[in-house]
Length: 112
Length: 287
Length: 103
View (spheres, helix red, strand yellow):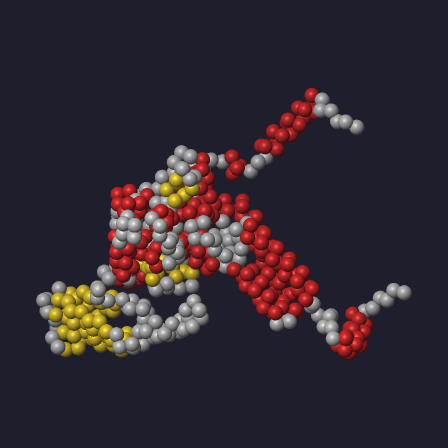
């Protein structure tokens, strides 16, 4: 039997499980961001930043966002950690785009 | 089924290859013409600032702003870089523990030669700047290299610049494809936008010299290295070319490369070359 | 050891123009070092110029004055060849003094 549940229904059933889970002594995975999600987001951001590093075009704000993500994760605030990691990934990708497009675009600025 | 290239197919394949190579971006086959570049570079600034004497471009914002110029001329009677310059002179004269001196590493005892740096070292196939040469001198004599961002390197280069005051930049690009490549690399770096603020060196120093960036008046790119190293009031001290390059990068929110990395040396090569003929005015003082 | 005070005084008719550059760290006490601690405040508190036994310029300084301060001022009186004495004392009690001839 397949159970197609709405988010609300899922939340409800999760909450009803909480006492059980707490008793079991395990951390509850809520509908909000999880550590697994954070790790995935951070890995993606880090990979993009490393690519930007290979292109010798990293931004300072990317490093700052990555650091923010790590700090938030360390405090257990995975929502914030994930959003910082996603911002870091976006910034890293923008810096990659910049480096790639500037390979030709620089000529537009050249004094001739 | 085996595909056999019959003569017509061979011709087609050859034509295709030819067509592809003709579609290569022009830049790949384009030979840089540094002399033409330098001429165009100079003309751009001379036309943009017709009232500024050519030699005066080395004074950066003071060439473009009367009020700042007055304050600077007053302070030049008692320049803030005096202490660092004195320290540099003492350091240069002091022998290494092995008995040799900096003078032994340089032509003409290191006096009056700053205008020849950077140069292209054809043995190593790379650009050698004055800062790099000084640290190499130290290492050859068993000494630890100085940080390119610190006071000691600034003081040494200040002294060497001082002994060359008035001498025109005389950067050579030998007839060597590697030297041309380094020059082109430096030029490319100069015009490439970087950092989250998406600025290139040209954004400020070609498109906006004389304009304000917050409280600072931007210097023109022509002659911009002639006054180096500079005592910046902002820094409360003397700073090297390496320091200026790295801080410019971080100010536009780009992670700086390591001081004296290839891009920076090539950038210094390009910027110095296009300012050939303009006098060394270092060490300089800036806000 | 060289003096921390560079001074030049020039007589222009009735007026003597004085310029000074003083080598001093002028630490405000608010700057942190590499380890995160504060670099202790170390600044000139009083700077005095004397001519003919008379104080012609006195500065009471605090932490707002930057490193290696430069001072320029003029005073009436003072002839070529007269002595001008410059001295300072800082918050640590360190002092320096020098005397130059008015040019």
